[in-house]
Length: 491
Image (cartoon, helix red, strand yellow):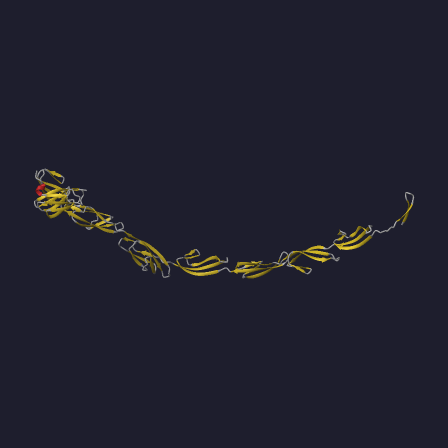
C-alpha cells in the first residue's frame, strides 16, 4: 500500500507500505479423560469448556477452547459377613480383613472396589470331663466313657461341633469279712462286737464308695497268775498261770507254772484254742533277811552275870525258847537267837560268853631301900601287903606282896640283875650275872599282868613294842628269889 504525504518542507512524499496480515487463531478441540486432564501445565478435574490464550508465531493473539469431558474412576466399598469363607469375583477369602479389586468403568477408567470382610469360623471345640457313674451335658446323660459330639449354631449363625471326651469312674461297692480276737481296728475305728459295719470312702478318682465289713469277734482268754508274790531272801515261789491252753512266760518258759527266786515283774501270755491271747503280770518281791546282832558283855567274872540284847528284828526266839529281846546269862556257853523282820523273814546270831576266874598271886620283894612303890602305892616298912587289881579279863585279882626293905644294901650287888636299854622303845634285855632267871612277868602301872616269859638262863628278853608309852614293872623270878624292876617304854 502507497500513501502520499507532504513533508514539513511542503514536499510531496509517497510512502509505500508492504503489508502482510496474519490472522489471529481461533481454535477448539474436545477431550475425554478419567479423573483429570492436564493441558499446557493446567490440570482440570471437572468436565467443561476451558479457553486458553496464546500468541501465534507471528505474535497474534489466539484462542483455543477445550471441550473437556471428565469421567471419574469408580472408588467403591462394601461390607460382608460370612462363615468360614467368602468368594468374590472368583476369589475365595477365609480371613477377616479388607480386600481390594480393580476394574475399568464403561468409560475405560480404572476403578477400585474395597470389600470389608468379616469371617466367623464355625466352632470346632473339644473338652474332657471325668465323672462318677454318669455325666449330663446339655440335657443328655452319659453313663459310659467315650467321645460324644453335639452340634450347635454360633451367635453368628455358623455351624459348630463340640466333642466331649468323657471318662466315667464307677463308685465302688465292696465288702469283706474279718475274724479278730477281742477287737478289730479298721481305718482308725475300733470294733469290739460281732456285726456288719459300713464305712464310706472316696476312691482315688473322687467317687463315693461303700465298704461293708462282716466282722466276727472272738473273746480273749482271761489269764490269772496265782502264787506267793512276796518271800524271804534265799527262798523261792511258784507262779501258776491259768485261762489258756498254751503259755509263754517272760522267762522263756512255756509251762503253765514256773519257780522264781529273784525280784522282778513276771509276765505270761496265754493263748486259747481259738488262737486269741491275753497277758497278765505279777510283781515278785524278795524281802531281805534281817541283820541280827547280840549286844552285851561276853566276858564276865565268876559270880557275875551279863545281859545279852538281841537287835535288828521285831521279834526274837532264843535257843532256850524264850521270846524276849534280852537274856540274862551267868554261865559260859554259846547263846543263839533267831530274829524276825516285819515281813516274817528270819536270821540268827550267836554270842559266846566266857566266865573268867579271878587271879590270886603273890610277890616277894627284897629291896635295899627304905621305901618301895608298888602299883602306885609306896610302902616304907617290910611286911605283907595285899592289892586288888583287875586282870586282862576285867576280873578282880588279889596280889600279895611280901616286902623286905633292906636299907643300905645295894639290890644290884645282891641280885646282880641289870636291864638295858631302859628306857626302851621296843625290847628290854634282862641279865642276871649271879644265878639263872626262871621267869619274867610284865605288869602295867595298875598291877595288871600283861605278859610272862619263862626261861632258864642268865638272860631274858621281853618285847614292849606293842604297848603304849609309860612305866611298866618286871617281876623277875631267879634261883635266889624274886625281884621287881621298873622299866620305861618311851615314845
